[in-house]
Length: 108
Image 1 (cartoon, helix red, strand yellow):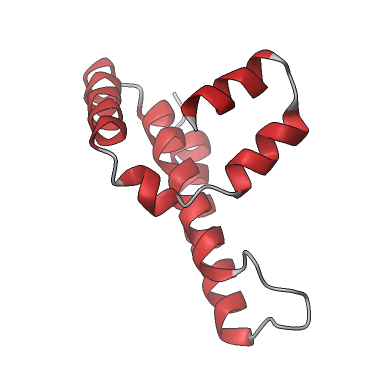
Image 2: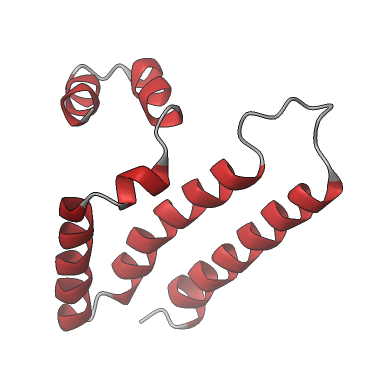
């Protein structure tokens, strides 16, 4: 999986990269201990250096992917129910509000 992602990025084949990423189960990726170790080390480095913006951005991407996968991925337009759509929109607004707060309000 990782070799395919890197090969797609090196070849700048974003269509193939998108197919690989859309097939990922983000919860399974996050169960990999190496991914957790890398994210924890990155969070510690960002926190020590005072890079809150990078830390929020780093943590927002997996949050958005998990939110998307758990609410709307794999559904056709006719299968949407209001509850899942409201959960997606609400989660997106919360993540967006946190990013706006750190990037705009607390901007240095």
